[in-house]
Amino acid sequence: NYILAFETSCDETSVAILKNGQELLCNIIASQINSHKRFGGVVPEIASRHHVEQITVCIEAALEEAELSASDLTAVAVTQGPGLNGALLVGIMAAKTFAWANHLPLIPVNHMAGHLMAAGLVDTIEYPAMALLVSGGHSELVYVEKEGSYKKVGETRDDAAGEAYDKVGRVMGLTYPSGKMIDDLAHEGQDTYHFPRAMMATHEVEFSFSGLKSAFINLVYNENQKGNDVVANDLENLAASFQAAVIDVLVAKTKLAMEKYPVKTLIIGGGVSANRGLRERLNTEITEQKLIVPPLRLCGDNAGMIAAAAYVEWKKGLENCSAGLDLNAQPSLVFEEL
Ligand code: ATP
Ligand code: MG
Ligand code: FE
Image (tube, rainbow, N blue to C red; front, side, top):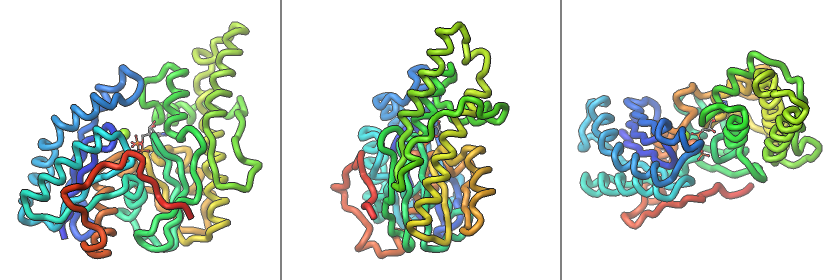
């Protein structure tokens, strides 16, 4: 079984080939981050144009690296959503065309199922499993009773964790995306500002990060009014305080979710799961469940994870998972709620 997968939901054009659901023969990733940096975020129209330029280059690179030709392939998989509509459409058009031209089935994949199944590429997921998915656009806990059955337990009410990192990073004068930089700075400082931990008092599996962002902005403003340029004078402690507040809430709500729905495995996924602080905390605090932390190259957007999720769909039978050439993007695709 060889699955060729396409991922173009945001600002990475990626094409991968997965052998027998386990072995990534290639995972080509063309990042556009440099084109978006000066705007402080992803510009949808620019993203789509880059995908158009890069997608065929990536397909050729993938086949070459895997030393395969189209006739060797079993199926074509593509991210259907969630993501930017125009960006998704480029991958979907490419996948449809490739599938049609080579008489291959087409398997649509939920981008968040991809972030989740990245873990399955490095370790065996024992079910039931819980997944903490934290990325630029999402912060959610997903219960996976058995392979391929994804149910959302709870999510953020407002900003995603990665979004909070990027917005706070802007106030700190860092370039977009700033998650990694804040993580590094945080390791040089201490939690001295004690920002609020939202929703900690509730017994609900729910996140909120916009209050933390406001508290951060207010603190910087108030200190500036007092003549203290806190960004210039105390950047490491600011970063450490922000990060401690994010991680405290992520860890507490993950534990709460696993109290409500006991599982054998905890998975983390999405761009923010690359966070060193989060990984360290989970490694020491998750003792009763198996913890699967994907390697950094599988945390951000990549087609390898889309191929992994597609393989799970493929095992359900093509009649249950394949799409026709009328497949459309679903920018706000969500998991069913538990
Ligand atoms: P989604 O998956 O929700 O559609 P996305 O695909 O844009 O959104 P990803 O590419 O999975 O998101 O993740 C990008 C986010 O991860 C950015 O917000 C970035 O700041 C954040 N990030 C990356 N590395 C780290 C880190 N070490 N610590 C915290 N955040 C990080
Ligand atoms: Mg990205
Ligand atoms: Fe993503």
